[in-house]
Length: 213
Image (cartoon, rainbow, N blue to C red; front, side, top):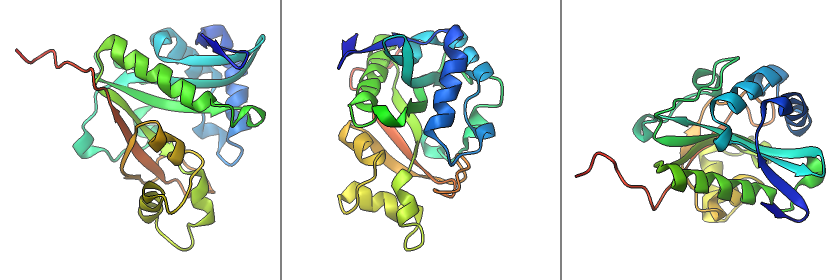
């Protein structure tokens, strides 16, 4: 799979150190303790390699989109990243009905090239291939820092949904077919967003309930 001379490949354990460096470079306002480290990325690669993708420019990794399978109740969606993904483990549930997107990370110099959208499409294909209910994720809100003194995170998300405001991440997610069903408090500590994230969902239109007769 390629596009714009970039290659999209499945994650492998030996990529872990390089991918950790991408995380650190992409989220400078986050505490490194709250980001993926090499040990955790190796766990993701070993537990669910078909669910995570690395974008390469030649032999250099420049972006990644990782995720695992989880069981999840959309009616009880409040959670934090630390609760769902304890340090050192992938959080993968082999029988999970949902694909939980854990991170999409793109080096700054490779942004605005459609990489994020392509990674979302690859995640959707995983859901189709494995008959998963869809994709769920806590979405960072990078644009909230410019508005957090004048509105709540919930109001900010509603303003982005209505088109009144544009968020670099959430606007793209909405354009990719996701719904923002609420906000997550203290989801991932970040001094710019004050820890807020949007709860986003994409429903797989091809999903077939195996329990239905």
